Length: 304
Image (cartoon, rainbow, N blue to C red; front, side, top):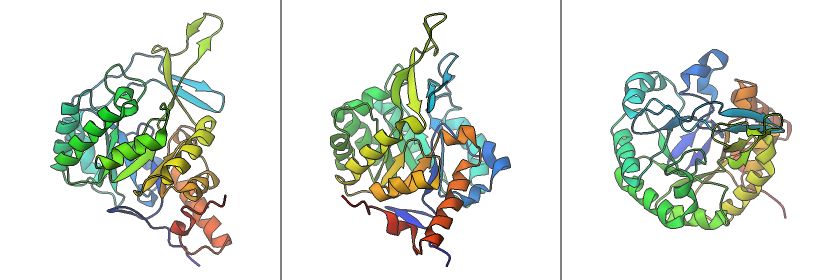
C-alpha cells in the first residue's frame, strides 16, 4: 500500500504535511545539495521585510539544553532582491513556496502583501506578527488583539493569496488570539513562534546574546507548542499548522493527532539539513506499517 500523503490547507494543496519553518531554511536553494526539495510539502522562506535588513548584532545564536536561542532580528535581502535573485530558482520547483513577511508598521505589511501579490510563483503569505527579537513591531502586533486584527485585515485586502498568520506563544490566551486573526481574515494559522528566553555567561556575568533575550526553539518547547496547537485547533474552523520542536515523524504525527493539518520543521534543520525530507519518509513508513491509507486520517484524532 502506498499511502496518500496529500493534505489541504484551505485553498492550498500540499503533496504531504511537512513544511520548513521560516528562518531555518534560508531561501530554499541553500538546502538543495542536501535533499530533493520537491519531496517537501512546502518551503517557507526566510522572513521578508520591505527593505533589506542586517538584523541584530552578534552574538545572536546560543545553544541551550534541548534547543537554541536566537536573536537574528529578521536579517533578510528585502522584497526587491527576493523577487530578482531568489524567486527565479524557487519557481523551478514543484513544491509550493510560502513567503513569511514582517513589517514595522501596518503600512509596511500592506506594501509587502501587495508587492508579493504581483509576483508569480508564490503559494501563500505567512504573516509574522510574533517575532520577539526586533525592537519595532514584531511581538507587539502578536500580543495585542486589536493590532493583530488590523494587520491581518490590511494584508487580506492587499492580496488574493492564502493568508497564514503565525501566532506568538507569549500571550495569555492563544485561542483568543487565534479567533481574533481568523475573524480578521486569516485563512490558516501557524503556531507557535519561539518563546522568549535568555542565557547568561556565568564567568562574565553577561548575557550570551547581544540582544539579551532571544527566541527559544527546539525540543524544549514541543510540549508547550503541542498544547497550544490542540487548544487552537479545538477553537477555530480554519486549518492549523503546528510548529515547535519537531525532529521526527513521531513528533509530527503528535501535532496532526492534536488537530494540526500540517507541520513546520525548524531547529532540526540546524542539526540535520535533510531533516524535513527524512520526516516525510519516516511518516510514510509509519502509515504503511499501521495500514493507514491517508495522512489526513491522522488529523484531529486525539482521544481524551
